[in-house]
Image (cartoon, rainbow, N blue to C red; front, side, top):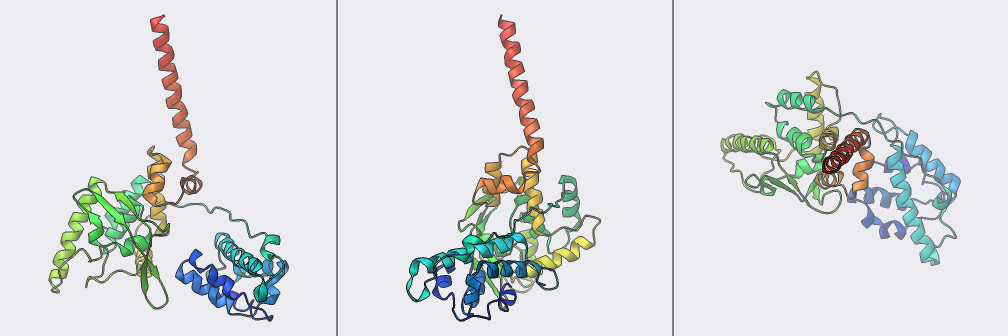
Length: 328
């Protein structure tokens, strides 16, 4: 994705970033690593100047990506972090790859402004589930809106990771879309997690598995632990991009606001916090690496929670005061 934007910038000069990027490739996903390694194969001595770094960031923000505009400030900040790490390694190494200073130290990446989050409230979520109930995407919508799973986690989920008896799902993989195929990798944070299922979700998944088993049996295919929960008619997994395209088509047929599929996950998080669930529990359920991420993303829900908490403390204090006066 990024190499088409970065390539024109890194064509001039006579020095390459070289192995500094390869040293840092473990810090990013394989797809991102490919992008940065392709950049490292470009001659780029001029990029060592802070002004050139600023030009790179401006280019990424403004350049056209699939006619959808430039990259977000958050993504450009990620580019900045990787470049800074790679060049810091070059400074430490010395020798043929030595540079006297890291130009990223003198450059401020664009400030990431949190975008307004569009989600569905509880009533809209119920309306959504009923609207898509008869579609092949129903189980995916269910897992996103009522369990908070990411798109890649839904696309990678197999029945062997779903325990309908205990009402839990083990999130151990995520599907990543590439140009040529879909690869399965660790979840975003690099560690597995367990997501508890509500009785309603368990009931819906049982019915879904039965329908899927009947459908595949007509093709002579048996549902096993390796069968994907969200699959095509022949049992093959839904690709992440296919899931997104089908979602856009489905939501356009409803009267609901058009939001991203990923925002169903945000809706679930908002419902959790608005219902008084502790942010730490919500964070673990969503698979965030730190509870601070949850608090930052869903700070719009917290003011109401704070008022409710103060009211509860006030009620407890008043009850204690009344009890003391009664004893007196």
